[in-house]
Amino acid sequence: MLDRRILLTSLAGLFGLSAFRWLRATPAQSAEARIAEKFEIEKTDAEWRAQLTPQQYEILRQEGTERPWSSPLLKEHRKGTFACAGCDLPLFSSETKFESGTGWPSFYQPLANAVAKREDRTFGMLRTEVHCRRCGGHVGHVFDDGPKPTGLRYCMDGFALSFHPAAAPSST
Image (cartoon, rainbow, N blue to C red; front, top):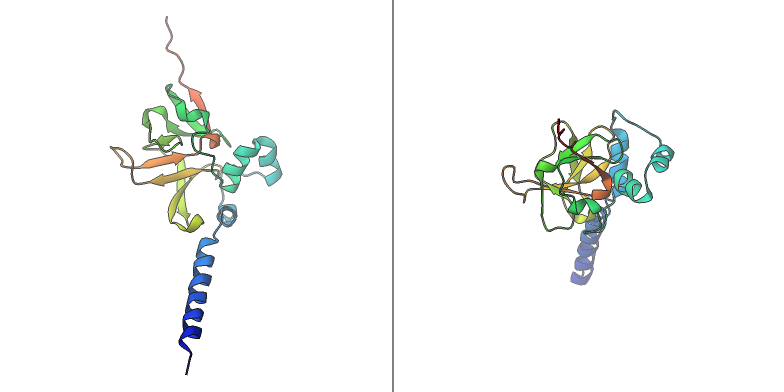
């Protein structure tokens, strides 16, 4: 007959192992999935490292996250376009940017054919990761707590983006 203590210890161990395997999904594992995908712009790891700053590389290529409130683009309010810092593909219009209070630049809608999404189970939670559809660079996550008209919040890492101000109107 099994001792109750042994049974409970075994069950707790199995639960702990299952939880550990679920929680241990890391950005590096997601990056492996990204490598299996094909993108219009593909570069070697060395080429990405040479092109990007260390912070951009960590976010775009290793799916890292910047500290909240650290991006200069958080307070960018001019008209223009936010593009992928890796390949310069326009991703978001300033017209869809809003103040979410989260510490990251937030948008309620990407430009057409700009981003792609995939399931992200890192850090023990289920989220939707957003990446540039042209180079595969990780730019943030999307949540369903945004404003109208979409109800979505594209919470972007500002260091994964570059900003291009709209051209000033001609005075002629």
